[in-house]
Length: 192
Ligand SMILES: [Fe+2]
Image (tube, rainbow, N blue to C red; front, side, top):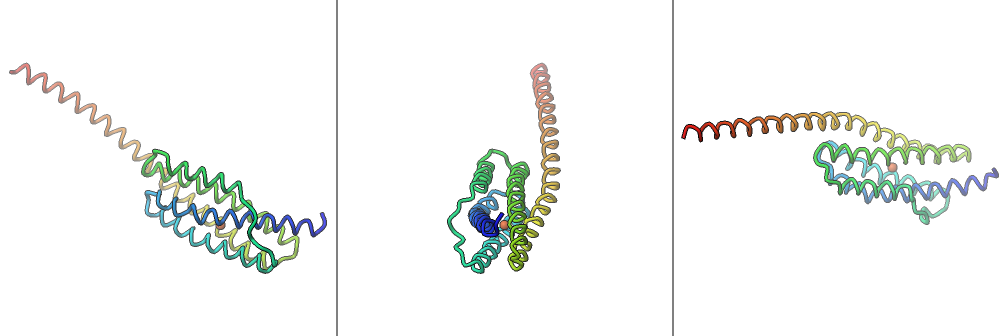
C-alpha cells in the first residue's frame, strides 16, 4: 500500500477515535450517576477525567498533522453508548445493576483498546514516533481501566450473589413465619 493511503486511513481512524472519546465524555457522567457502589461511581468519574485527557492527546496529534479532528461519527461507540443507556434504564437494582453497568463499560474499553492498538500500529509504520508515544499512554490507561473494572466486577458479582441468597433465605423465613402465624391463629380460634 502506498504510504499516502495508509496516512489517509490513519487520519480517518484517528477521527473516528476522536469522535468516540467525545461521545464517552458525554456518556460517562450518566454511567456514574446510575452506579450504586461508591467505588464504581468514582471509577467512572476518574475515567471521565482520563477520557478528557485522551481527547487532548488526539488533538495534539491532529495539530502535529495539521488536520482537523472533526468530520467522523463513530457508529461503533454510538451503539455501545446506546447499550449502556439501555442498561441504565433497566429495572435491575443495586449490585446487579452495577454488574450490568460494568459489562457495558468493559465493552467500551475493549472497543477502544482495539482502536488504539490499530492507530498505534499505523503510527509505527508511518514513523510517527511522537504519536506512538501519546497513543501508547492512552492505550495503557484503557487497559488499566479494563483491569480495574474486572476487579470491581469480581467484588460486585459476589456481593450480588450473596444478596440473592440472603433474600431467598428471607423469603423462606417469611413463608415459614406465615405458616406459624396461621397455625397459631387457628389454635387461638379453637381455644376461643
Ligand atoms: Fe479513552
